[in-house]
Length: 242
Ligand code: G3P
Ligand code: MG
Image (cartoon, helix red, strand yellow):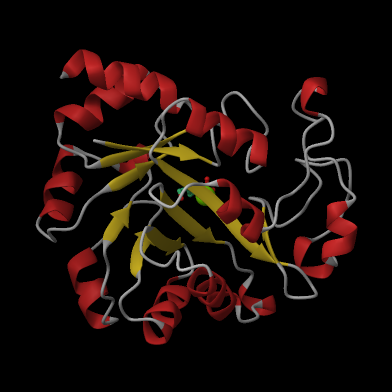
């Protein structure tokens, strides 16, 4: 079972910061999930919320802020004083930090009314660094997945899902989504849903699985990967099961 550090090792360090990614790597994590957004000046930054308010000392909508403003914010002190000085990283900084063999799940966070060309910018950056291979691009905005596929058909894409589904195979076919993986929300997974998703013959990577009993459930029902805030604990538990 593949273990993705969700926003890095975000159970121990401020989410989506270089400190959180470094820690996940130190813990032996071989896959990372991170959230990518566009600033007003079309720079790619790594932050989960559309607003900077929860995870920094600033206020404002990421899409309405310039990179320079964003770089002045402290993205660590809200979590713990020992992380004061952590910044909202750019995607490029994360790529520079993370070794090439680590699988990166880049989740594109998009406000549809304010969408720019995040897909193209992400792919251009990946290609400029020859990092387009060990990457899965996922999004709750499924039009982003279509755009990514049109722009670079060979790149891996993951379908992010939330809630109880009707006929997923029909949805995927109707929209001609050529997916690498399916990323359902764990609370909605049942044995039946796993069986339905398994018929698509694509890896299932579920989020966000933090409790040992839930990790155990995923293992028992053959889920291919978990996205977790505690990658070290997931790893330990897996060793017990093996
Ligand atoms: O990519 C999995 C997961 O991160 C999706 O939800 O809200 O944590 O970005 P969220
Ligand atoms: Mg995410």
